Length: 409
Ligand SMILES: *Cc1c(COP(=O)(O)O)cnc(C)c1O
Image 1 (cartoon, rainbow, N blue to C red):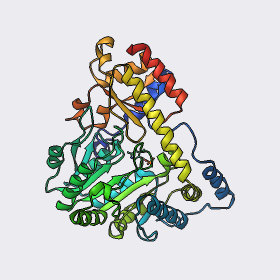
Image 2: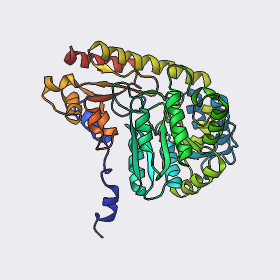
Image 3: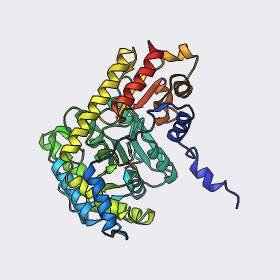
Image 4: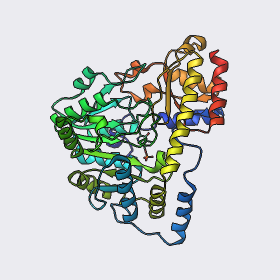
């Protein structure tokens, strides 16, 4: 049968991504690529050494589908250390092929065709793709410029009787914002009222520049959901309905290793496990072992990573501010967003997509338009706003800022 019809229809608009298209154009013009969010430095040396040793030691066959016992224990220990979550590595921890597979399997295990999935907008593109493959609908809570914080009315509006899942990404890609306690509490209350499962994407859990990251699933940490008796009940209700997704990609600078994980209550993990077993079974055995070594001994390395990322993000934000752009304060993740619309008139372009191409061709810097992370109805909200992936080495970021300076002064 000719390709087309069912398969291509089901894939809808997801045949290629803005990330790949921007990277290809950037390569053609030898632009500095601050588009796709991956680091240009390696993870901890002891983790890389552990990968070599694991190969030499013959760790070459399947691990259990739920993941290597050593890695599941290292993940449970890391969550206890950083969030105070007590997890049973046998029933509450699942190793996946990156956070990407964890998110996909979590959504497939919870959401059915016709359901609503509530999500902060702008959002990571995988969410919209998987939700559309399922035949469900995204209901977005727009984070509006210039501060990119959710408004209570927008949060209420996103919930209907069809809401079966809430996707939270905190710290947030692409905006660099961190969820405020009041907003987290309202979203959590509404999730409980609607009996919706919360799926939190915490791949940037360690990349927060002020204060410590608090997961909505952390029952013993009161700073997010409050400390009144009712809040404690809420915290327990939330923990019982929350799947936390994370990975080695951003925390240990290993995006190409494809090692991620999902943690949560056993009754939800069972469903995610059933799906993920038939997607990939399990990720590369030697790399699971190496990530375990990375997590077991990563505290200082990860603290230094966060300090360094904070410095880079602030440098980019300050430079763009000095150049007269409106910039959202980066509180976490890899990214700095700013409004580049002052360039529209100067360059004769009329929207963010044209601007992205012009930035590559004229300034030699590739950035991603925030509208590419938004639903078609809300894309206009973000017109002019672009994302810098500030996870590159300082010299590269400075060179890119120098190129922008020539056009913005
Ligand atoms: C990078 C990223 C992911 C994917 O993580 P992997 O572990 O590499 O699959 C998921 N969510 C967000 C928000 C990301 O930025």
